[in-house]
Image (cartoon, rainbow over all chains, first blue to last red):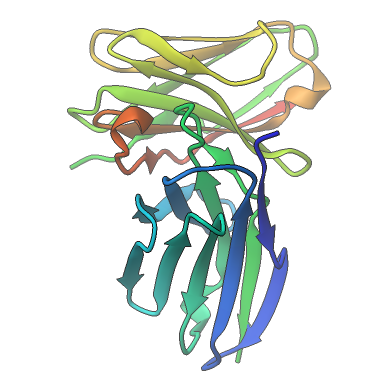
Length: 110
Length: 115
């Protein structure tokens, strides 16, 4: 079965702290995507990771992909309130469909 | 550049009715994908259209169908609505679609409520 799991599902963190969201997937893939969704809004593309060892960074967010471990991480550095949102990873298992993770609801508290 | 637009934004229907949702992609984008988002099942892929052809389909019953026009605008149709079809329906456009590993740009969604 093609599965994508994220953890944690809920994350409440203080401003200024660092944390990591994990995305595990069930079988081989070298195409992984990260999205952000604000409440009541649509999805915004954050990163596209297309090879083993790929690392992308934008502001306080950094994503990486380890295809051998079937793991992607989204690292948040020195969190600020504006980063509060739900973050999704999605995997293309070679079938040209996106299988999404459950999402991680991130709340940044002062 | 205008983003992806979806109409209508909100829709209320009753069981047994049918509904048509519309998606206009970013100019120049030839791929349109549709997704269903519900609290219980999360985000699920419905289908992808590229140059008026359905290129891929998710695991949804035949009540869910779609099409794409020559200007890349896409519609999806749900017939014989069920309560479980209540969801946010998102479309996304890209230049070449998932086959090309492009970034997908999502529209604001259509919130469908089935009573």
